[in-house]
Every structure is written in structure tokens, then in C-alpha cells.
Image 1 (cartoon, one colour):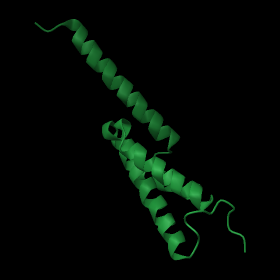
Image 2 (image 1 turned 180 degrees about the vertical axis):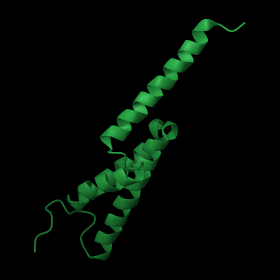
Image 3 (image 1 turned 60 degrees about the vertical axis):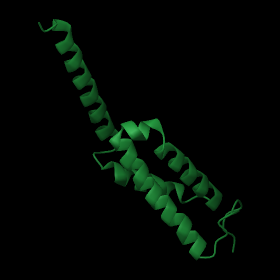
Image 4 (image 1 turned 90 degrees about the vertical axis):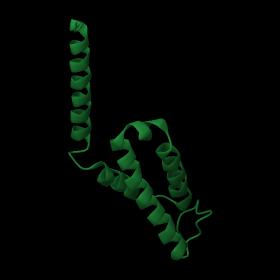
Length: 108
């Protein structure tokens, strides 16, 4: 026979996951996770090069983490962030900015 408690647990799980999805959609204004990651990377890219590189290393570490393996939203978010931060570091290295130590910022 089917136990009455099992159906309740399953519907509770579904309602919690739907609540979580609604919450994520609310805080991101319904934007795709890739776009949110790219926008966050643009905010990070306004800082000095060493901070951009630290954020890139942190995003790579988080991309290999458990949450990224479990959550497709987090995975796509980090993929967008990695793409934008990597492009920014490459742009700075091509333009001649010192990629290794830019702690003081750009001064010309």
C-alpha cells in the first residue's frame, strides 16, 4: 500500500523548490543566470586588475564546487561571470596594463 506521508513529503519538496525558484526570479528580475553573471562581472571589472584576477580565481573555484554541480542556475551564473572576467583580464593584458600588479589603479 501507499503510505499517506510520502505524498505529503513530495508535495512539500515541490512547493519548496517552486518557492526557491520564485525567489531567485524575483531577485534577478527574471533575467537569465548567464546575464546576471556577466553583469556582476562588469561591476567587478571596474576595480584594479589584481581584484579582477582574485574574483576570476574565486569564480573558478566556486564553479568546481558542490553548489555549481547541483544547481544549474549557479552553474550558468558562474559560466557567464567566468566568461566576462576572463575576457576583461585578456583585454587588459593586450592593452598593456600590468596584469600582475595593478594595485594602485591606472594613473596617467
